[in-house]
Amino acid sequence: MMDDPIVEEIRKHRQAHAAKYNNDLKAICAALKIREQQSSRKVVNRAPRLLLKKVS
Image (cartoon, rainbow, N blue to C red; front, side, top):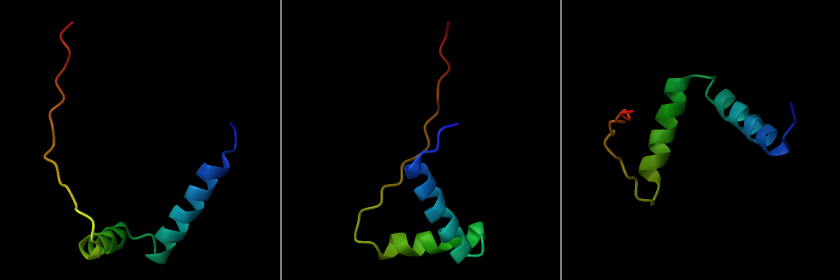
């Protein structure tokens, strides 16, 4: 498998971010929600869509 420096960098940052919250997914999500609320960007929530099966 080829080593991709971009993928390795992303993994390094992801691991550091998770370690900041003791690898607790609930804490990570809570922090992201707070960041989302404090952001000046517009957040769009879309309803889930059903994927229709193709008829053969």
